[in-house]
Each structure stands twice: as structure tokens, then as C-alpha cells.
Image 1 (cartoon, rainbow, N blue to C red):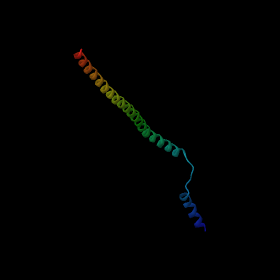
Image 2 (spheres, rainbow, N blue to C red):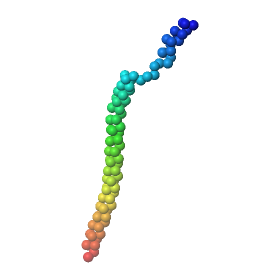
Image 3 (cartoon, rainbow, N blue to C red):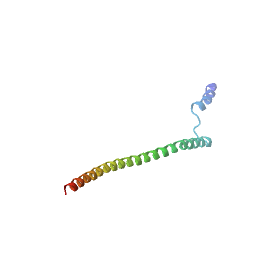
Image 4 (cartoon, rainbow, N blue to C red):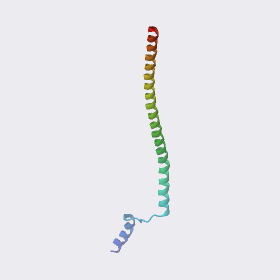
Length: 92
């Protein structure tokens, strides 16, 4: 019976390890979290900058297309007015 108790005492530390968190464990957790944050934050920052720049580019592209269309319409009106003035000048 004594051998069984001794064997159980020896294996007890392996089966149920000591669950106290010592300072080394907490230090390693904080260092790990810090390293992960160092890697993740620049990636998030760059992604948000790319997103906002792409939104700005999209807005500028829409405005550019609208201005090109407006320019085309104004040129057509000017051409029409020039044509009318040439026709009216020849009639009078």
C-alpha cells in the first residue's frame, strides 16, 4: 500500500500540474501580447489608410466623370449656338 501511495504522489504532480501563475508566466503572456500587437496594429493602420484613400479616389473619379459629361453637354450647346449664329448671320 505504501508503494501505491508513493507512486500516486509522484504522478499526481504530472496529472494535475500546479495551477498558480508565477511572474514568469505573466511576463511571457504580456510579452507575447505586446509582440502580437506590434505586428497587428501597423497592418490595421495601413488597411484603414488604403480604405479611406480608395474612397477618396472613388469620389474623385465620380466627380471627374460627371464633369466630363457636363463638359461634353456644354460643348454641344456651344457648337449649337455657333451654328445658329452662323445661320442667322447669313440670313440677315
